[in-house]
Structures are given as structure tokens and as C-alpha cells.
Image (cartoon, rainbow, N blue to C red):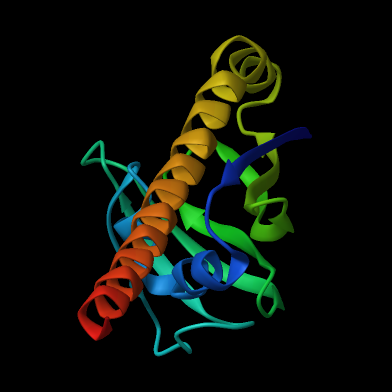
Length: 165
């Protein structure tokens, strides 16, 4: 079993970051590896039991995920239960914690490579690095969107104060 954890500071409070994460069907808004995502199977839009399909940006691959844990305002865990990736038994935690001057986004993933010894070699040589890069890209996209939204909110407040004066 392989394990990867990635964290990234975000210059926005958790109250700005969490709604982006909690919109489970819309991860394509900030995840550069996903070209399209949507809630599937009539599942709820968020919370335990929510399911989504993510069509990956390479145009060939896709995954289906199900929320198995939900910590409102903080994090959730998803299992990838179907898809075209060369790994299985995938559990990913995605969340945000308060930090000085903003928050900290994190992704934590465990998985097992498919294809026995060949898969474990592929994981050690290439896959783990690719997964870390993908996870970093997700957190950077989340950070950029949250900081843009936070900046937009600050600009709106500044404009309102200026107009009132």
C-alpha cells in the first residue's frame, strides 16, 4: 500500500475554502486534472453517500468516487470505486484547517498499485511522483480559487466602504 500527503498554505480563511470543497460535484472548477465532474446515481450533492464521476483531462480516463466520511467545515474522505486508473483500494482525504493568516489545504491518499510486482515497480518509479504532482495541482487550484474569491470579497468590501464615505 502506498501513502502520499500533500499540504499547501492558502491565504483565505476556512470559511472561504470549505464551500469550494463541499460542492462535491464541482471539483472540476479547481482541479486541473478533471475536465468535467458531476454528481451521479441520484446521490446527495454533498455528505456521506454522495457520488461523482470525474472525466480526466487526458480525455481517456475517468473515475467514480463515493464520500465515505464527512466532517462538516473541515474534510471528507472518498473512495474511488470504479475507473480506469492503474491503482485500486484508493481512499483520499481532502480538507482544510485553520492556519495563521488563512488556512491550510491538504490531500492524503492511500492506494494499492494494480498488476502485482510490475505495478509496485511502476509505483516506485513513476506513479507516486505523478500522483503527488496531481495532488499538488488540485491544492494549487483550490488555493488560487479561494484566494481569488477572498480577494474579490475584500475588493467588494473596500468599494462599499469607499462609496459610503
